[in-house]
Image (tube, rainbow, N blue to C red; front, side, top):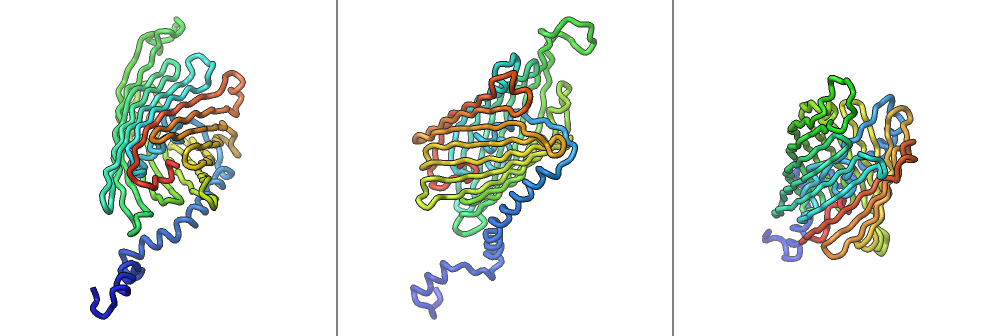
Length: 346
C-alpha cells in the first residue's frame, strides 16, 4: 500500500483501471467499440444480400442445426458457456418424400475454468442419410478462452476440431440399366477433415468467424463433401426493463469456395429464461437478388437442467408442395455452475 494514501483511497485506486497502462488500454478499446462494430456488421451483412451476383447454392447438412447447438459451425464456441452439456438432435427434412434427408447428432461438451482463462472440450457424433448416400462419423474439438478485461465480461476464444467419417453409397436398389458407373453394390470411403474458428463474446453481444472442412476434397463418392465453407455468426442481447424478456437477434452469413452463399436472419425471444421461441428466415443467394429458401420456427422449454425444443421448417420454394415441411427435435441436459452463459446459447 502507498503510505501517502488512506485505506479508502488505496482501495479506490486498486479498483480504478489505469487506462494509460498498455495492459488495460486494449481491453478498454475493444469493449467501447464492440457494440458499434456489431451494428455496422449487421448493416454490411444485410447489404451483401442485395449486392451478391450469380452464385450457386448448396448447404452442408450437419451445419444446418447450428441454431440448437452453435459449436457445430464454430469450434471456438465450445466451452464458452462454462457449462457441461449433452444435446441430442434429430432432423427430418422434406417429410413425406421417400429417401428425404435425415440427420441425427449427439453432442457432449464441458469446460475447464481457471481464473484468467478456460478450456472447452467437445465431441460430436452424427449420422446423415440422404437417399442412397450415407455419412456416419464424429469429431473432437478443443477451444481456448481468454479474458480481455479484469471483470471477465469480455472474452475471446480460439477453437480447432478434427473430424473422421465414413461415406457410403448404396446402389443395390438402383434400376438395372446399362450404366458402367453403377455397380449395384455398397461403396464406402473414409474421410478426414478439420475446422477452426475465433469467437469474441460479451453478455450483450458476440461475433465469430469460422472455416470448416479445411482439407482439400478427398471423397470419391461426393466431390462436394469437403467444400471449404466460411461462417460469420453475430448477434446481440436486448433486455426489457423488468428483464422478463430477452430479445436475441442474430445473423449467419456463409459462403464457400464454389461460390455458394447463404444468409440466415434469426430473432429469438426468451421469457423468464424458461421458455423461448425463435424465427429464422433463410435466404439463398443464387442470382441477384437471391430467393427465399425457408422460414423456420423453433419453440423450446427449459426445465431445471433439462431442455426440449421443436422446430418446423416451412420451405419457400416450389418443392414445398410435394412434402409436409421439415421437422427437428432436441433434448438436452446442462450443468452450469456459473450465472452468466455465453450469449450465443441464449
